[in-house]
Image (cartoon, rainbow, N blue to C red; front, side, top):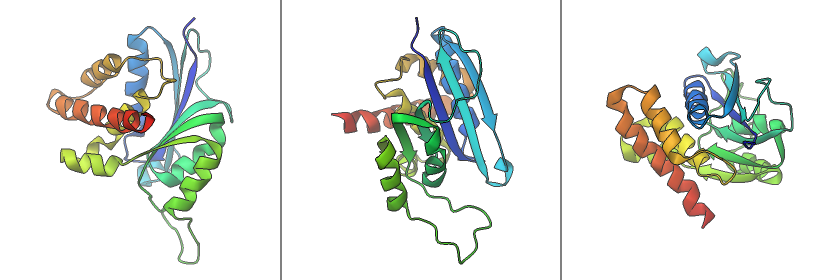
Length: 199
């Protein structure tokens, strides 16, 4: 029996949420997991919320994850991560990219919680791994690799039953050749950012 795992990917349109969930699922299929996936786009094309569900195991019959059942959330920005929190099981894990994107159409009289307040809320419900995606991407000279950095962070969690090599193969399968090496570096740095915090 292969371990069952339910992951929620949450962010806004244009951050690469769907691409990341696709690569995660491909890595699982490389290791002969049964996979089911679903996406909820909302107003994603206008910078609105987007959520993708990925479920892997010996036999997965439905793609949607029930509220309170996800093993982990991968949040592409702090506010959307907090919004997805009800999906997480008790003592689940959160990987959160340290970026806050105020919602479109926010009026001046609406008080938005700051990043630290949102992180405190996350910490009351989950084991939280903060990932400086923008900072790592800047070091690599390309801001578009934040999603691959987050994939690397996810791959380093002890509950993820997939080998790093399977993720690397999935990255190579999915991306254009000229972007593969950059994304493999981004994946490794994201992976190290979680591994270093676990020591």
